[in-house]
Image 1 (cartoon, rainbow, N blue to C red):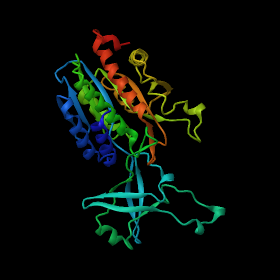
Image 2: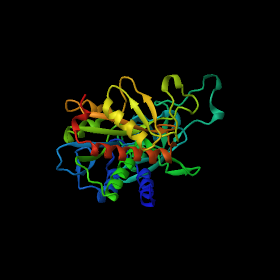
Image 3: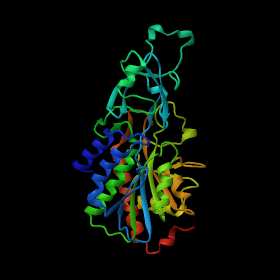
Length: 357
């Protein structure tokens, strides 16, 4: 990662890209990627794909997703308070006392998730924050004032928390899940261009939308691309933080390298190519078992188009779906190295049918 890429990362993360409203982030991403690809594909819902060698018959995807979790305005009371519903897996327990941005046609309206003072709460029957008892205050005294600001049912709500670096090598921000994926695949494209690598296949650098509400962007774009191979990157949990049961979640930790998944959706030969590549290039990695499904866009690619050889490389992350998601710089660099060198291994394989069982 160089200074230019770090500046892009900061701008990309600080820009809001809630599920269903990813386009401003996609513009930033495409502007950064433009020097490193031959062409772009975009679809109706905003998935963006940078393509290298678009004329090639054999197609390889590297993929991340562009959207972040958020809230919707669901109900405005006569007193001017705003109740919300989720857009993706937003966590009600972290909401109280957070600042918010409400996105309207008139621009951003500032607000706060209020919460009763500790002095006023009945300790014998104290309520925890829930999705149906948290509400936003925009400083208005009635519904009409709220509506004059441009706020209405259906406006999307994000947190304004911005990117910073903690203790020199920990990246912290909301939305690292999974705009770090979009950043990492863009860095792979940059490295291919700057190292003058010529690939014998088409490479589709894919930044999908709407993953947080059910892998929808990937479901759509895989039908457009019809790839032969897909290497997906997303995040997984650092399970060394408090209140996570390792017997259930497994052991993965930030700073210990990319995480390679075992799951029915992960094609065995492609997974072994990733592992062999990591060993060959001395890239540290971890393993994770995902049981029936990975819960990532890997599932959407794997089970499309009659079956696509797919694998998942995860970036370990602390405090998922909060505003202080945290990853380790070395893990980011090693995911980039692993994808880049895995593409070179595919490049060197003359028989593309290798990935068929």
